[in-house]
Length: 126
Image: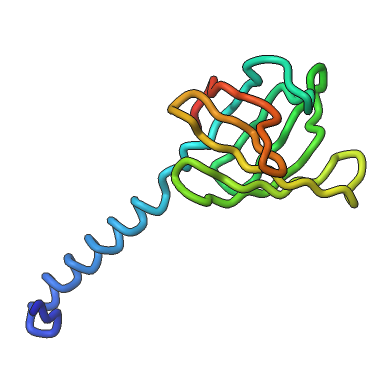
């Protein structure tokens, strides 16, 4: 068994720095959902774009809108899915929940209440 107390102090420090670096590097990679997603066709929600930031926030835009119609927070469910809690920019009392499923590197589907409401293509990775 490896015992850090029996190792020289300089070597212990080097091992500790290496271990911390590995943890920090693995924790700082962006989620596969991060980036700019553009609707790949007409959809019932009338959404045109989703901007998903590295930090857990995102904005949803409607067709013809220059301002976001919804502001959201997100959390990773898995490497291929995020859960989104959104608030309407017009009515902060109205809250919506969505899930974005990454189908492959460049395609995703937006789910609400178990149904696909829009399909998106990744145009700019973060």
